[in-house]
Image 1 (cartoon, helix red, strand yellow):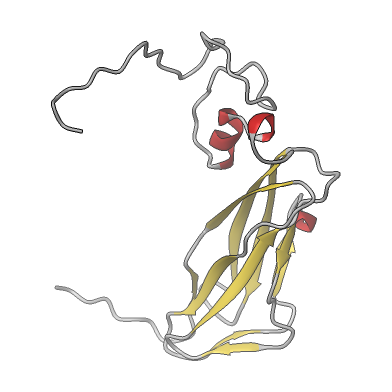
Image 2 (cartoon, one colour; image 1 turned 135 degrees about the vertical axis):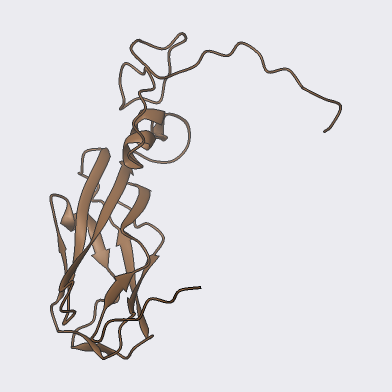
Length: 178
């Protein structure tokens, strides 16, 4: 096995490049964790104010435990940043995006960005549930459901065209198993 040496210096990394949320408008999502790691050989420094929210819908997200001072991570050490989706009750239902920027003393990657993608719904259950198309859009799945209105979870049969739907009339059990 060939081992790649770790270049000297501080090196920042995160355990996710994109975080996904779904929550009704006017509520607060469950907290999600973003782990920031120092994979380098010297102390990683994230100065006060170096972790910021930006983008079109930044106000719909919250950094729960954003450091107020300088954060120093020794080699191999991590910091868990807690993130929530907090869409206001007046936000339009649908896809909301923002990003977290983290500036540090990493000489090769001094500013790392984590994308935030969220779906604001009108509530839970029944017609409040998001459409399949909105869920596909949230996760950047390039399929078209054939729904005439992505804001509605009502799905016509047969679906509108063009679409990526496969019409299956019946599933047939292939064997004697459960």
